[in-house]
Image (cartoon, rainbow, N blue to C red; front, side):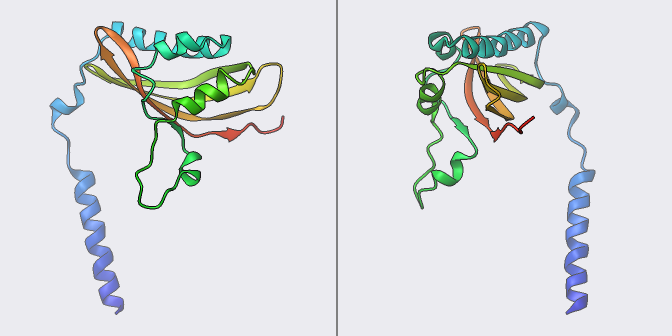
Length: 169
């Protein structure tokens, strides 16, 4: 039995090592991107926080590809489990209600922004802190945004994020 476990571990180790040792073809590392596109994506991210901070729902919605995009916090995964039914990640309406229709004002800042782009597809991953205005209440977490360039304009096609209560300071 012990030799069988050793053999299984050795096979697993060799398989893992062979995957890690494979070099990707050189053309895979050559994503198509430009400084102009990166600046345009950075402007989308700046408009995101600006419209959220000012409570401008219309400007925020204009950043989205449409209002049916995947838009969800990971904490929703447990509460939305529905047996065999597919998970509906289109939760922008919940976000809109909590942020723009709640009557509360929020301040959000992005940190550690990383942007990757290949042609008309981009991804931004970042850390964020969101606070209720004039309060220390809020949340922080990590989010990923998928963006598509449509008719020359970058639009948010999905947003998935973690969220944790801010630690008391």
